[in-house]
Image (cartoon, rainbow, N blue to C red; front, side):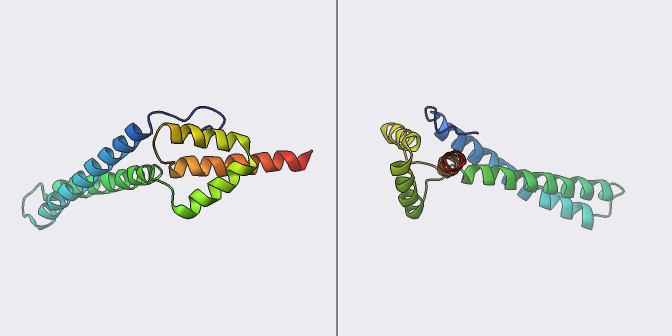
Length: 134
């Protein structure tokens, strides 16, 4: 999700967070369930044991990569830390757009997230760069 500091805050932040958490848990479950299948294929003495082992390890690999991806996305929606909140307050004093966005988020009765904090930092850096060019 892309955050635009000059626009209204997205209202589906919690829905996205839940979606990524659910996807992450599903991928973890598939990865954990694929391990016994892979080990069965390795230790079985069937003519299909190589195929079963490859399927199990392939499932584990794909589900593991998807788990890491969705977990990283989920972590973008965690609340900001106190030192980040302090830095965001300083940015709010410096830039009106960030202050307006911050008040809109507080009016929604939710905490600012890491992805919003990073967007505010980028916006502040962009505004500073625009001011130095003039």
